Length: 181
Image (cartoon, rainbow, N blue to C red):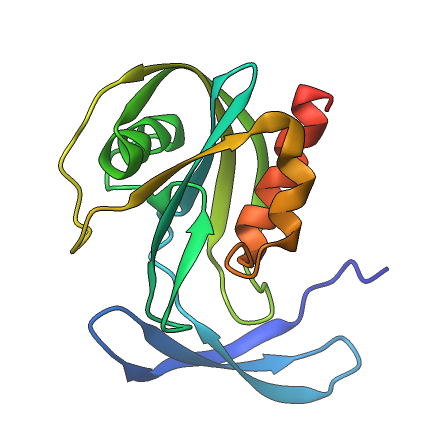
């Protein structure tokens, strides 16, 4: 196991858009080999994803447009943590914005990295229980379709073509372990 991280000899932004910055990093490894790596420079705020459990029988998911695949994807509520906001606050806000529910009980399940070879971003995965109706206005261009899914059929989500986002699949398995299904 490697204990010593490569030395960063230099870093510069080589491209950027309204949402993304690409940073080129010049590294020197412990064996003196040097390489140029490119990575997405994150905002360091992080993101959240929430698995909403409506009751002992039902999961809630949303179907929304995903520009990267130009398709509608089924998944769990998610979003960025706003400046000054704690992860659990962002999780509850995203629930209310995306599916119209708040949670009296939020449990942190795990922190996931997103393609760590290219992204510095981390996502906090929560499970939400003791839900209550509460709607906040979000930034989605169209309403997210709310899907009620039988908890005892959680495995059949994996057979759906539009349930393909790796973060949602990971969150589903973490929820399954937590709920002991």
